[in-house]
Amino acid sequence: MPGSVVTFYSYKGGVGRSFALANIATILTQWGSNVLVVDWDIEAPGLNHYFAQYAGPMRAGVLDFINDCALSQERDWADYVTPVDLPQSSGRLRIMPAAADGVDYTARVQRLDWEELFGKYGLGARLESLRASWVSEFDFILVDSRTGVTDFSGLTTAQLPDILAFMFTANNQSLQGCADITRRAMEARRNMPIDRPALLPLPIPARFEQREEYDRAQVWRGRFADELKPFLDTWAPPSTDYHKLIDLLCIPYVPRWTFGEDLAALVEAAGTTGTRSPSQAATFALETIAALLMNKFAKIDLLASSRDEYVHVARSIATSRRSTDRQQLRVFFSYSQADQSAREVVQQIIRASEGIVEAADPDEIGNSRRELSPDVIQARIATSDVFIAVVTPSLESSSGVRRETEWFLRQALRSNERKTVIPVVLPGGESAFSSSRLADYKAIFVNNIKDQNEISVISERLESVRSKITDVGT
Image (cartoon, rainbow, N blue to C red; front, side, top):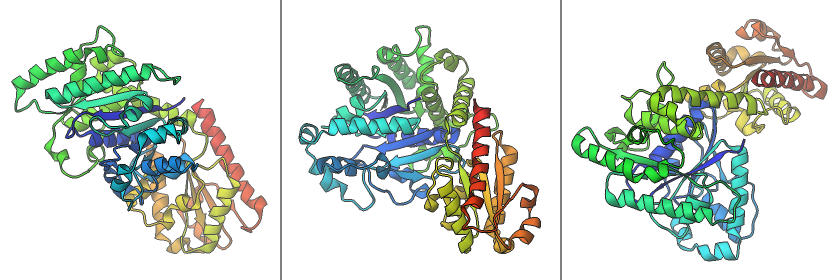
């Protein structure tokens, strides 16, 4: 099923647009969705700051894509994105920043000639091709759009998105400006020669304060319900209580989240019920919006009557999609980074398992070789289907492999998903294997790491695991 492109737009600044987008992306990733976030606020980028501690240096981004169009250069969509390793997430998150780290984006933005880019260099067609790649690779693509009216507003508000999430505060210029731009975007979309459904509008009141100014807040709640009715009518049943719906979509003002770029969705995790509570005011609303996107604007009656049940339905959709749509196994390789033979056998397994193992890139698969935080390593372990421990004589002195094994075994006990442990024992590692917890699992003994027939036994085992997971999913 193709993914959904959602543009987050605001007519005025100060609404917390990037904050909302980053946290909704985090929640969707926590549920197991594959998510791409795109920083199209190229005049004042900053989305990358929310994910900086979980990602490496930002690679090429939006400006690099536009520059490549002007130079008539072709690059794969993956060249413009950077992986983000969120802790305790079972999905996959990538970011397409405004530009690579260290790029003087101000000078480059000022040189952009949008009329020439579209007329001479075919930016519109290139964008359609890029979008097609996005929706085939990701469940959700969340685009952070520039505030106000710009030369390229139509790209992010009309051409690219399936859903236009417009955010506003309780003042006339913010509300009316957003409403006007959204109406224009919906009309522009209808007149575009592209084969896509009508643009879906999603109004989101933001930074709304009703505790200190309750009476004035009630007046604005009424205005929101009245003035936003034409947009809500496009997807909400006529019987819906629009006042209640607006309340559920409203992101309240929480002073804590006005400082820095912390991800509230990581700080305020879901409780034992599997949902956020109303006391977690901002993340409660953000989780509701994430559930609306996951449910594709269906079951609005359920949202109005039982918000928590609506969130549970959304999470179950993500779990089901993760089980049935995945074509490759997520494999965590644990081995002593100082052992050359262990590194070599991992690379041979990856090469022999092309099409079976996800992200078959030794630099990314070899997690223990990189200076990753324990939280990132545990998150990768938690989202893996298979744990391959390469056992060599150095296992007894390798605290990293033993620790990673314990993490995976604990995770396997807690998870409802099928988890598999495959010890791969290299020559000389028999004693270390028999005295470890890995001895409880069926091992594959490799006598000669150069022998492709022996490596193929591991690949066949992985294919068998994948087949079982697919059978369970269907």
